[in-house]
Length: 202
Image (cartoon, rainbow, N blue to C red; front, side):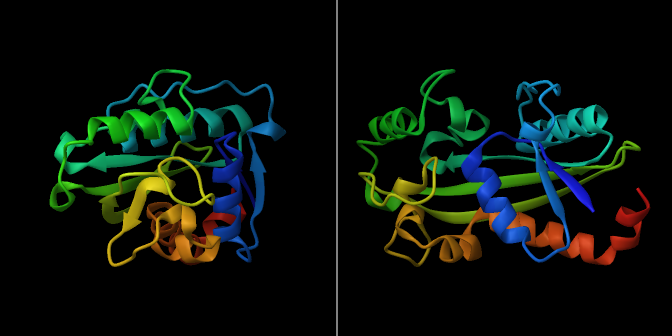
């Protein structure tokens, strides 16, 4: 069974491939389909962006496509950076710049008000236009300085609830069990298990 991951983010591909290992899935990526377009993430919700990407890539490849959109919502910042998480410090911003801006915006926010959550929406699109979505959430808090070298994005400043280590300090399998993407992918895996015959027919 072929599934195309609608991303070129190497870390994201590695994380999703690791969690889906053993499912009998042949994972393809955008690198396998260089003629497919870059899909602009211009919707105002994680679900909207994920569905838009998945539909565009299944149309281009004529294969089942899986796309995700995820980001960080900080309660004291009224949900920012939200869908702008990857571009928080500008269109061409990298992880370091985004974290620096976030910490600057939160420099005067006390510890008890630094709650945040990671959100992930995974969209599964069939070539016939059918779409399913799966959500995952990871509650936690934002630290005051980056810690750890694992993971990507805001992982170095995110402490999941009940832990004194950031996502970036955890081993991959530890993070997978707690992360928003890991939880969304688990729901996706359960769906595949119960609809496997549908996949084989497409």
